[in-house]
Length: 256
Ligand code: MG
Image (cartoon, rainbow, N blue to C red; front, side, top):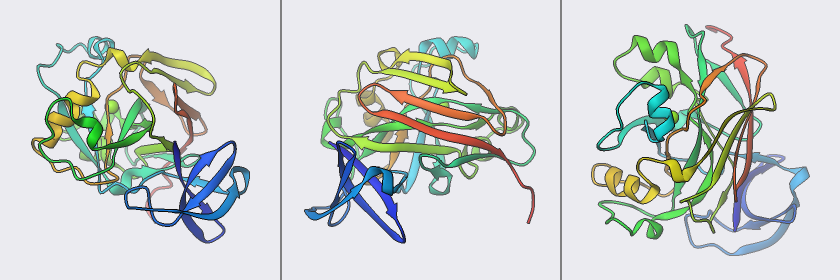
């Protein structure tokens, strides 16, 4: 099932997407719901980020080829970091290059959407806490990352976590093609099978330390081929079985 969050006029809602039509639901995908009977043509709504996370957790160095391109050893355990709720944007939105940065990199990633409270999840029980999967970008100000010992501003700036276009609930995340295009040119082409730590291992590891709440998102790391984006660029992350997330790039307008 594809679950979308959308805006129609001033109305914001959630619905089930099928054949270009969104069937509205009464609450959210994270609560008991019923279909309301109201439908919207996909062309008539604006899709929003498909969930509103309390936090986004990013995983560092989780594809072997990316670990190699960064010149690092394969990690023994996952390193994770936070992107705040204010970093989230949706399909068609802009990633705004933050002040002081001249190198804003794309990182196309599989995004896991948590469906129920997850704390100390045993290995192999991840499906009990996952609602589904969507496409994500871990936009990174690489130059600021090199300057700072913590990645709060380099990876947590406003608009650094595009997710969407919807949540696919019926998906095995173990071997999905992931393709990142910059202005229609393929820059990353890999499979989620190349993760160092798979979705199950990531949820077990992270939930041992951090309680994951419904709607929270884990960005599972990026394959090789990362590189810079310039204002005016179009970025697309496409994942097999989900669809494609498209965003554009803009430069910071500076202080207001
Ligand atoms: Mg990343």
